[in-house]
Length: 55
Image (cartoon, rainbow, N blue to C red):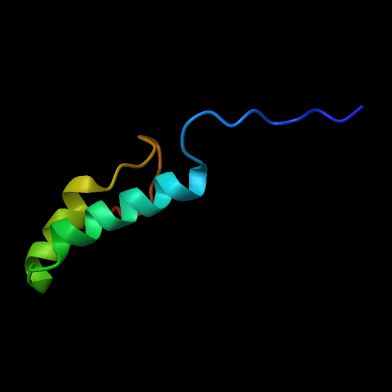
């Protein structure tokens, strides 16, 4: 027997589109340097991750 998904609220695609639109509005008038700082400040990675670390 198949299980039917119950839709509650917005789909994942709708949520991702809202997030994308919000970020687009926040960064639309930023310079390259401001954008770099924005990404660095907003980027969250696993604490043990070595990606993005420079030595």
